[in-house]
Length: 96
Image (cartoon, rainbow, N blue to C red):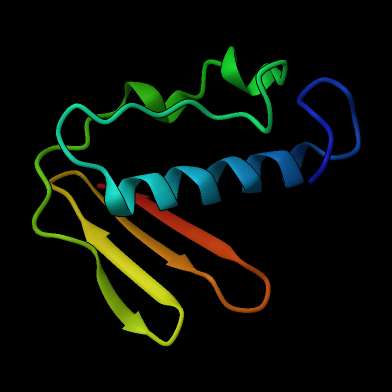
């Protein structure tokens, strides 16, 4: 993926990687699940104050669903998540 924030050049790639990781986590999370973003232990993503961490999820409206050959979706009270795992992997996280 790209560079870490503040290192120039790859910030968007790093942010995209974070969103893909967060979306994948949200698809499968259960009570007492915890998430940390970073490509490795020394990655500054572990200490980055991501703004979405302070936003409420609410209770899940159900388990993740497969909505396409490689696309998965899950809804919570305050956010919906979609992860497309085909081709150029992408995530869409929509906060209400």
